[in-house]
Amino acid sequence: MSKTAIRAQRFMMGTLLIIAMLLVNTGYDWGKYIVYFIIFMLYLSAFTGFCPSDAVFEKLFGKRRD
Image (cartoon, rainbow, N blue to C red; front, side):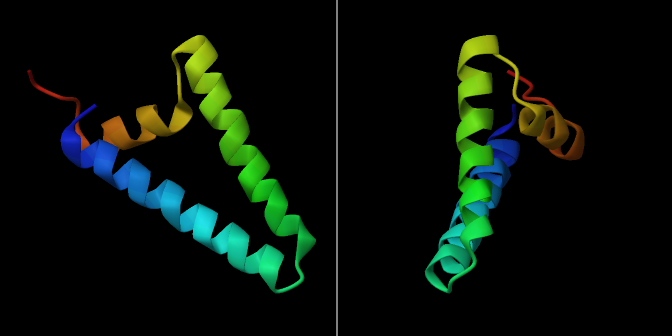
């Protein structure tokens, strides 16, 4: 993954976590499901070596050319 794709992915993950925490703290309990989804995707990536967001961001920003 290119450095730009990694940075964009991390920005997206941080933004989703902020949104989830704001939802939970304002009384919308379903915001916790966003957190659960992110946790699930992190474990999926760790165990299988595949993360769907990696594939999406590689298509958007291009693969790393080392």
